Length: 309
Image (tube, rainbow, N blue to C red):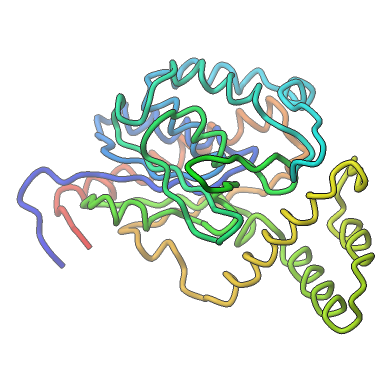
């Protein structure tokens, strides 16, 4: 362990959060109220949205927007698509995020940020830290199969939460002194254990029987809604690859969050994604404030010591 004599830098690592993104809004507000400077935020999936608004100085506007969202208003940002490996494209959502990022690039704002995505072709974790913030946030929220993968920099990118729980590795790569990870995930990866097990069964039978028709059964096991298999033949290619990557990642028991100095795992009820409502958003926001207030003394203590891994 090295003791840092200069002013220690603080990094936050936000896990994906689904309908719990408002937790990060409350958490960041409290840090500001206690004059705790954040130097770097690494995030994936929903955590990238709050991070982007915070770094771009629009957290109050972002808070107001998400407090007013309903399931129906969210659907207005989704456009049905076909033959592109996803049920929807989210171009409109990207434009919404551009309102909160003011069209800025990573290089223009502070704190520094690193958004995590996955190259669906190789399984590589890709850290997005240059260029258009709104597009990077959109990419990090691109749930495989549900939303179209995004081509960027010669890679085919999807939600970083596919393989990343708490992206502490990005903070370690950035060289921050104190890294605080927040784990808001209800499952180890995007997919549940039952979905991963269904894919394992499919892989086994396809191997010994060569029956590709089992893929439609697999879709039923995943309980996917509104899926038109004929109009979207690339869907299974994307979801299949994603699940195979998740299966491979599950074989590695090493927890990612061990890269962090401190890991916070809020003890919150895991409301279903379908239970998105202004009431749920407000609840998670208040919990974010409550948890932050609980950990402010510990974070200040770590910053005084200046621990660097």
